[in-house]
Length: 307
Image (cartoon, rainbow, N blue to C red; front, top):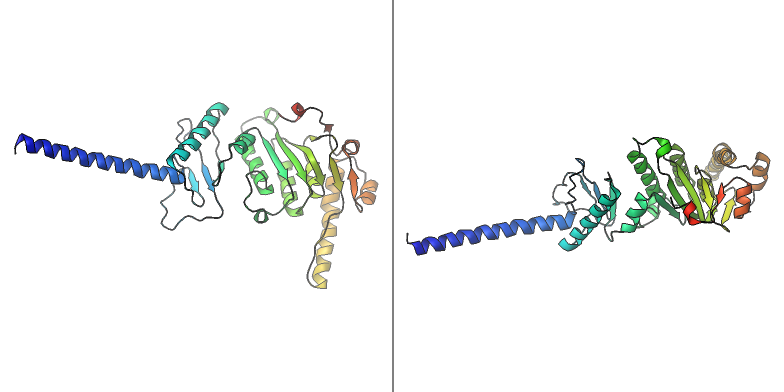
């Protein structure tokens, strides 16, 4: 073989290797941009668990196997630049906080970094009507009772090796007209079981079920001129006469054995006052709420509640 032909063959082999290398790089980039899995953090053997949240989409049948530490729910389409920007932002946040989350929820339609910041600052928000999770629709993280419960549990998990007296409190801001009793009491039970203290703040209204949630806080705060409402609830019952009677009996029992003891435990409202007031619309101003022991402090400076 002549030197000339040998040079051509060497050149051809190099070109093939170069093309293969480019193909591999492109394939890796595509995988990364679709699954957003390259959150490589050397500080933890567990790494960061990413949950891509998009309930409107399901993963295709031929989707590749999930990589370790990544749970893919639905599918997400990101360019390589978008994926790298998201990864860079999360890693920067982890570096600043000097801690590595064991779980992270990302909204597939828009990565709301403010919500992540609020989670790490331990500020949670209950705004609007309290509904079962399937009735909320696609709301931002932290807005549903189910997600608030999830956040409280996650924070307790991260605090498990921290002495209770040294734990930074969770602050739950509430502005709600009330809603589902089962979902509300699920949150109440979570707050009561939380070793990390949960503080509650009225930033609008605590009405009906929201009132019962608000009074459960280890410390209860309210901005001036907020609204409070305690009443006997609203029932929507349908069915046969027997079923309506059964449900009515259960509601009356629940009020007597669960709701009434809860109110008497967390406030200064007496049994006599409760019996008389709860059968009507018992509205309170902030100063009334302080007098009845519904709250512990009226906020005059935001520094009081922004821990």
